[in-house]
Image (cartoon, rainbow, N blue to C red; front, side, top):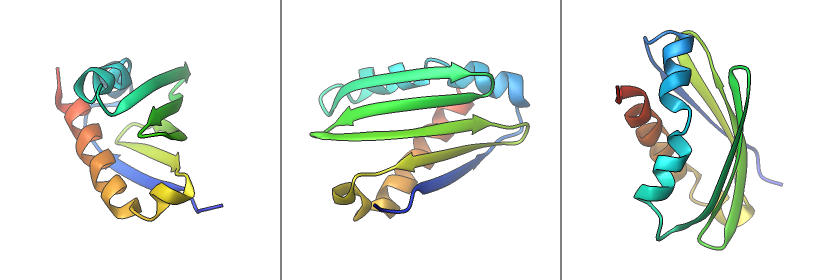
Length: 103
């Protein structure tokens, strides 16, 4: 099994505001990338979200933890997607930053 992909996204919103902006953010990804994403499930427990995404015939799972000054995302990529981990990391950082920047 491949190592998890870990991404840190810095912010200066504080934990509560960052969580507010991220909650439901996975749903907006589905509307934005609906042609590539078959399913998205997210479950929040405190400041942690567990998620499962079905995309391009692959299933991706992971969790994110919202902290005071950063969001830590850990993604378990299937081996076929692990080969493009750097591109996935860039995508996660970009989308996470966009979600945090939205009011």
